[in-house]
Length: 370
Image (cartoon, rainbow, N blue to C red; front, side, top):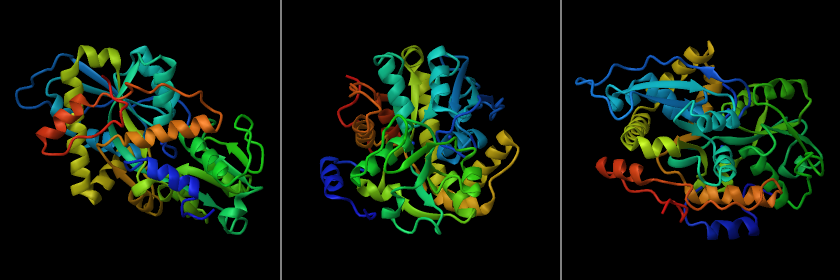
């Protein structure tokens, strides 16, 4: 299969009306929780508090989470909250962020689609809502060029994904199925060996030759390229208009019901941060890297940061049709029972903010809260 869509893929594209998830080196990498101890910007002039004294947000120290990284670094989120204090915690794992949301340790989180779907389904729709999009793109298949020279050469090779059932793992298993190859979704064994490897250690595995390639998010993909890897496939080429959700904004249902004004303020900050990033790409890139250095102790080198930054697009649109497709892919791969996703989105406040900002409303592909 080439980057061009197969007949089945074209059929999917025809059915999808809208365009179509991570540690320092992983969008859905798994590891320990870390408190970022946010000081944030000063409150607005009047220092007016909203209905909550504090709002606690969670995200990954990763450029696919550029919105909260830049929004916090530049004080754009805090500005909209006035006297309500912004506190943040960073995570290396989607499941741990969902656990924190369910436990009430955080109120709002930036997270990939697979953890959001899993959290919603496991709680029978009671724990969270997706209230906004945040980022699209930034996932690539990178290989050792001396071992894999074409897409057909992937058969029989060892290819890393971040974790069983995570967003990239599901995407790779779906792509394998499109090729007509067979892989057991639980063991990862079959015509391709799917090696579930934490994004933090994937570069070492790649360098040692224990894997032949990896289907991974940025900036892991660009890190592998800096080690001599070759981009064999950009996942964006498989989606209509090259767009697919990699990061959403989710909110605790309990917090949304109790403090809609605070959620609205955070969403306004998110929308204005995304606009600032689009208008100031170089400054935003530097800001995100400064935030990463503050959180991890080191920044990304230019040869990794620059290509990674170019492949990710911040967006307010949750790209709901692509989330539905990703859930279908997980079902097809045998990793998920067919879920009822009706009501997973609530974009009422987002569309209110977008209207005030003179921007078009977003759609939920009939998965919005009624």
